[in-house]
Image (cartoon, rainbow, N blue to C red; front, side, top):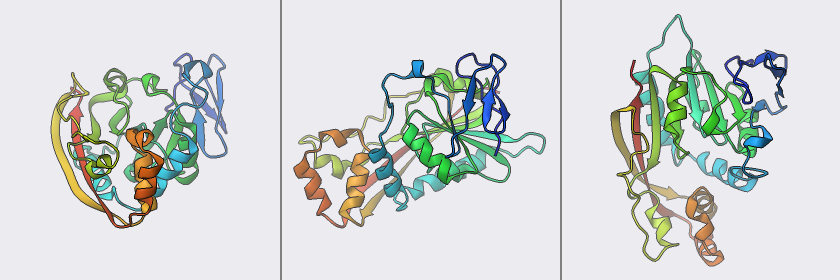
Length: 274
């Protein structure tokens, strides 16, 4: 599949696709990798050699998500998308998953009528996404400087990823929507209690978006029955507090089948002024 909506990360001119090579008028060029993705993260934009999640973290997240534990969240996100975005016969709907990881949420937004992009700074995640979900368009890039033109996307989804209002607003079309998913108060509380003596609820009050209009907000909350200790460890590896877990805690969780843990998501939907 050839995507023609990318801009050059170095000079912001449109990238034109010639087979597997993407080039701008200033002759900056980028190859489409064999795993079906573009690397649009120039070395000068990197803050470390391999930014983002490493291979082990990416593999653990994919293994966990493919068990279906977060499917109620995905189903609601996709339902909101189809509810709010009206198909236009004269214009292709364009969707962005900002901070898409290995593409689990990205590909479930794909339909016959739209074009879907996923962007993440983690090359290992994007390689897996591009290889598995070839109907979508994936690129390694930084969310702080997205390789897209202004007002391109009618729908941007951000699930547990950095929320950068100014840049997201730039690439969001007039009247377009930004959907964010952040932890609600009780998210993974039972897991946190194994790691912290005084596990605290997540703070729901902090609004990551200041200028777009909040048009809808809801919680999705349910207990997850984790079937194996490995599922629990995979979930742990997806969290910021994984690094705080001792080997003793990890062994305890690994040998604890049928662990029950609360999923508690906060969904907020914002709209840019028409």
